Amino acid sequence: MEAAPGASVCPACAKPLLVRYALDGMDGPALIERWSRRLCDVGMWRFREILPIAPGETPVSLGEGATPLLALRGIDGLQGLRAYVKDEGRNPTGSFKDRGLSAAVTRAVLGGASSFVIPSAGNAGVSLAAYASRAGKRARVYLPEDTPEMVVRRTRAAGGEVRPVDGLITDCGAKAREYAARTEALDLSTLREPYRIEGKKTMMLEIVQALGWSAPDAIVYPTGGGTGLIGSWKALGELAAMGIAAATTRCYAVQADGCAPIVRAFGKGALAAEPWIGARTRAYGLRVPFGLGDSLILKALRESGGEALAVSDEESEAAAVELGKAGVSASVEGGATLAAALRLREEGKLVDGETVVLFNTAHALVY
Ligand SMILES: Cc1ncc(COP(=O)(O)O)c(C=O)c1O
Image (cartoon, rainbow, N blue to C red; front, side, top):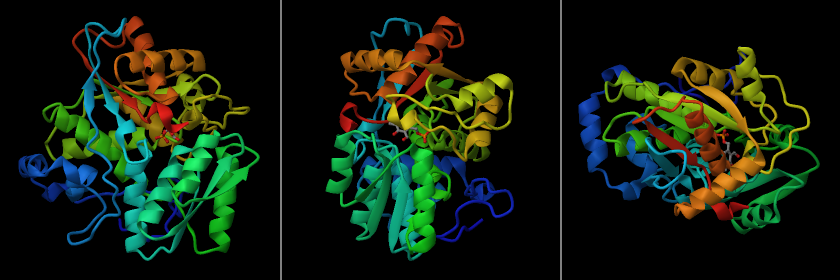
């Protein structure tokens, strides 16, 4: 389905729109060869055949993607696994948000958008500011008032117009929608347009490529709004449909124990999540009390044979230090994935010899 640049959610069910490609006609082995030949310096756009871009169109790019998949060695508790970190801190603005915003801004600019608005926990706002500036457009960013000063400064430095909000990201979302309704600004909120997922899915395409075109046994993903998890699951489905790799990966979502709507819903066997009241966590990217992607996340966890689990900020911070000692500059959210993997290993859910990928979604310095 071709969504108009201003399309937000499905008019019938108010759920997120997802991009579909004519995968039937695609030749998997030929694509593997083409993707392998393309240099990594074109970053995530080397997968353009299954990204929202037509031949001859030029993406709004700052060199996002092509981040390393690092083998993790010497972490107590993970011995016996083939454990890797997808190090997303290496992206242009220091987080995985760059992939989604490169895709979303590209499509929007090609569709004639003149300015943007976004609610953010921090990283998405910095990223949108950078990509909008790259395209010569304006961006307004609504941030919770207690967002670390570093994020506010980085957003402004990238050309973004910051609006602090007394509340959480959900309150920022309401402000962004209100602003978009009375101006020409396009709202790029998580899952209110279909293209950020497309950018995020390239993390999984790169992982499968780095593993010799085979999918990992498990991924552990720090889940807020869930675009990266939904994108990864979507990428696996597309690779399977093209006969490139079997979608056998178990997806594990990790949340902070002070804001764990998906964990609670998964535990109850629910199909959708209830908003989390009184969300508190120092992992700002995980402070998402409710998101539009709840049912898609829950579906990906169940269909893949994974689960959702919550860790404390203390566990995540300690694990981020462990990742640092292993040479990976990790955000608290990245630390959460290691804390969760250690728990899953202890519980026997990650077994000897399995290939497990943790997502370090941002650099340690972003906050
Ligand atoms: C560093 C970091 N990790 C994880 C997340 C959650 O990402 P997602 O929306 O894909 O669940 C965010 C979102 O703000 C983030 O900034």
